[in-house]
Length: 164
Image (cartoon, rainbow, N blue to C red; front, side, top):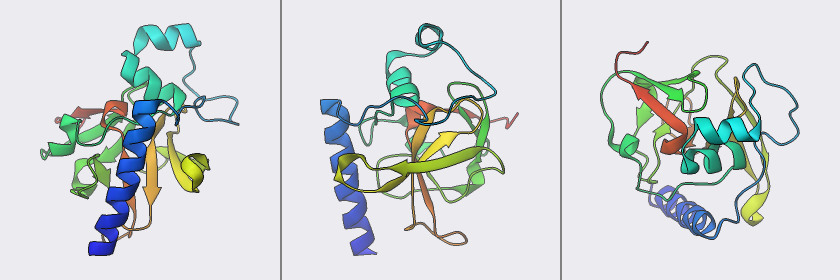
């Protein structure tokens, strides 16, 4: 458990530094051409806040421990802030101690993954299947039943307590 927390703290620190320096930024869903929801860069800029745009469209990482969604505990559904795609049921959320909202399982057909080789390491990046927006990363140090930790940028999510 201590080793897992140390790894999470180290990765969180590196991501926070990268976010501050702006070095973890790249175009959204690199290599994928089309999604059901598409907008021009100008349209995305109008639809999203500057921080949402940086994270969802350019793969930036929000600073750890800054998202109010990290402390959200009500039942409901987490949606993509870019297109309102349903992503995670609140029942799969857990406190990972990483500083980002974490889930052990996405909803069926909600996300896709790709390999991310930034920050001098290989990670599995998580994208919204509907708009290609960058959500965060998935790691294999989560709780049962999946053993996975979907570590998401809170700014890339919207919470609906009604679950609709």
